[in-house]
Amino acid sequence: MPHDPLQTELMQRMSFRAVSPGGAARVVLLNGPPRVGKDTAAAALLDRFVSAARLGFADELKVMTHRLYGHPGEFDAFEHCKDTASAAFLGATPRQAYIGVSERLMKPLHGDDVFGRLWSRRAAQLVEAGAQMIVVPDSGFHIEAMSGPIASFGADRVLLLRLHRRGHDFSNDSRGHIDLPGVRAVDVINADRASFLARVIDVVTAWLARSPA
Image 1: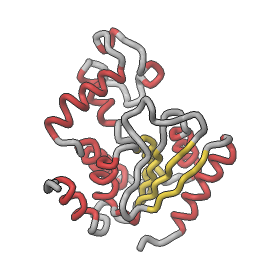
Image 2: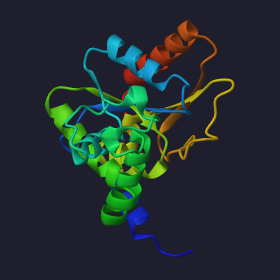
Image 3: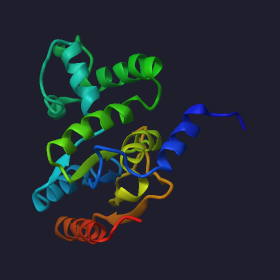
Image 4: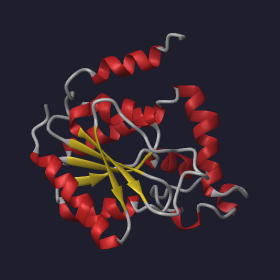
């Protein structure tokens, strides 16, 4: 099997304890197909835990794409129309613009782990500002989780929630359900909103009560 320098480096970094300024902060990764309830779960966690902050892997990509096209809006400025062709993106959909910037510019120039590394930079700022838990609502790529939360905070400070909902899958998405070495993973089924959110909060609460190894 060919030697992969990037994977070797990530595994070496993962073997160490969380580095400063990660400190005591923890990370919750929400992993699931479109419309499974990731954003809903993230919002519930932010409401429940006052020291929590939201930070998606795609946030930086969306902001830089908006600026490239002359729109200094927030990461979610075009969420309501991201699959609609727009003059704001010269006839492309926002999603097409994001993919183009990601796959034709950022990853070829900086490597496939670029958005994990950019996530880590922003996460450090959130922790310095007082965040004790970071909720990631768009986890779906192994390399982003490895190069971001695990490399920065340590596997023992990361919780992976794999979300499931009948009739929803990854058939039209490049992401998928993931497994991460050394990371506690829990599968949660979204059968109805109330029980789903209660289960998510219960799992996270129990995990926070445990001391990292």
